[in-house]
Amino acid sequence: MRVGLLTGGGDVPGLNAAIRAVVKVGEGRHGWSIVGFRNGWQGLAEGNIMPLGRQNIRNVLSVGGTMLGTARFHPRVSDGSMEDVHATIEAERLDALIVIGGDGTLHAANKVAETGVKIVGIPKTIDNDVWGTERSIGFDTAVTIATDAVDRIHTTAESHNRVMLVEVMGRHAGWLAATAGIAGGAEVILTPERPFDIDQVVRQLKHRHRAHASFSIIVVAEGAEPAKGTSMSYQTELGQFGEIIAGSVSERLRVEIAERTGFDARVTVLGHTQRGGSPTAADRILATRFGVAAVQALREGHTGVMTALQAGEIRLLPLAEVAGKVQYVPDALLDVATILA
Figure 1: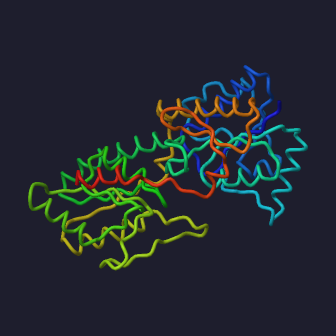
Figure 2: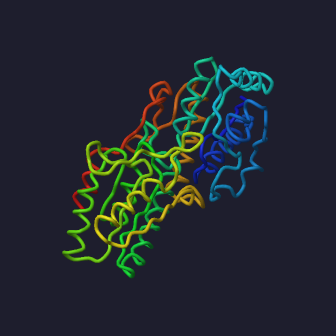
């Protein structure tokens, strides 16, 4: 069997562990040929090939990023790139594809699968918002990094009697903010799932500072927004490609809090540091399990499916069910953050 492999969307720690697993099991156990494509779907459309054998994956388990490279490119019928994808598949005599990516990459994988290509997807995203899987590759590492940052911010916040706002990624879902905020002991956690009331936030900060503390930590997801009808007017700022402008909501909050409370408020935007560095043990294990499961799925004749973690077990979900859906933070977890405030 000859299988193409690509990583799409943003990089996350653990991608190389998944690549390694696919190659070790596909080539080493089953004698398959694994063909890597550089820079995601773009590499597949352009025929940008990187051979993947046992000799190529030595010592990559602990390395962050992706050895294949990645790009935010999705094949479409409208621009002819879907035809280019099929041309490369035919030219390389590929029997199937394994695609590692987030919601956008997996949505594209479903579209390609609908044209008759055999595909298995593997979920990765630090936002943990791929529907149907309890965890995606990269999330655990990002939470660990964000929690460590919140821990470090505590000391400078207390030393200077400040309100410190720590912004983490999360456009549609606030998994990073909720989990790192709880783990780091933040006083206020703001996520896209629950639009906030700035008056309530200010009351909470004033009460805390009057009662027992001279500093506070607020963890903010980049996609957090004020509730409609409340006293703070704000519209999410987007960049050229529809991405959220990092720091925009936190900076606005900083100004509002400083003006309404008189407290010294500062912003720290973690940005791409959340996606960098060596993957945690949990991400290495999850990525390896997904890689092994993807190879096994193809061997058993499955196609148009995604590996998913459910109740500790690796299961296969139809890509058609996953595509276009968002896994939001459950109310129970958000309630924990509220109760501890």
